[in-house]
Image (cartoon, rainbow, N blue to C red; front, side, top):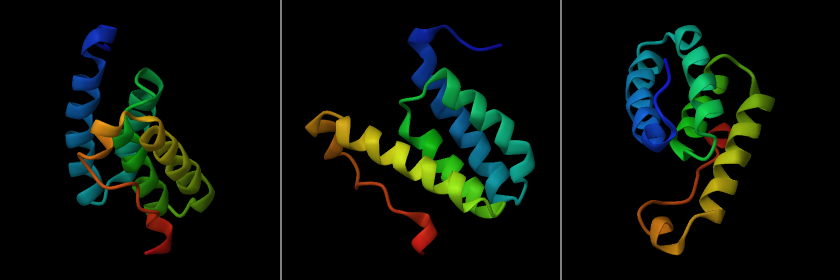
Length: 96
């Protein structure tokens, strides 16, 4: 069950933490449906797209990884300047 819209960012942040553990443990197949659901629920949460990019790299889908990088970059560029100061711009993980 998904939370109410007003708590969406918090839910997405908590999900990102649990999914990161799955990715680090080498279980991207378990993380993919969760991340896709989070991206649909809160499409402007940058961390979800960053995690999806990493996942798609792990499962060797570079086109999907690039799409997520582009979404993450769009979110960063449209954020308020104060928010941009909180963290660096997205880094293309395909080039590392």
